[in-house]
Amino acid sequence: MDWYQERARRAGGAWEGTVAGLPPGSRVTGVVIATRPFGAFVALDGWPEALGLAKVSRMPRGMVLPAPGERVAGEVFWHEDHNHQVLLRLDAWT
View 1 (cartoon, rainbow, N blue to C red):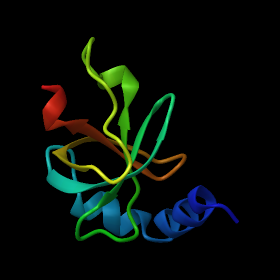
View 2: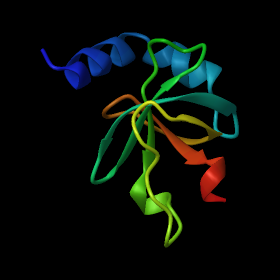
View 3: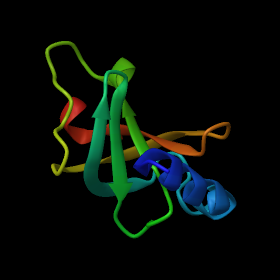
View 4: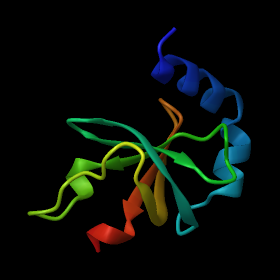
């Protein structure tokens, strides 16, 4: 099982608690654990089962994705129920 499958499995098992504890507008910090062409996956501080995603579609022109290992801060703007991802708007992108 690759890292994403394992994180997705854990996120799914804790999804109801994650959604209740991290409503839209919640401030979060974390570390980028992987990047893909569509965004950066973030391990959220204090939420070991949650999987954050900062999507490229929310990134202003001229910005770049944060690199794996980089600390980020931002806010929750949505929950993707179908894949148990917490969508993030990064402070660096505002």
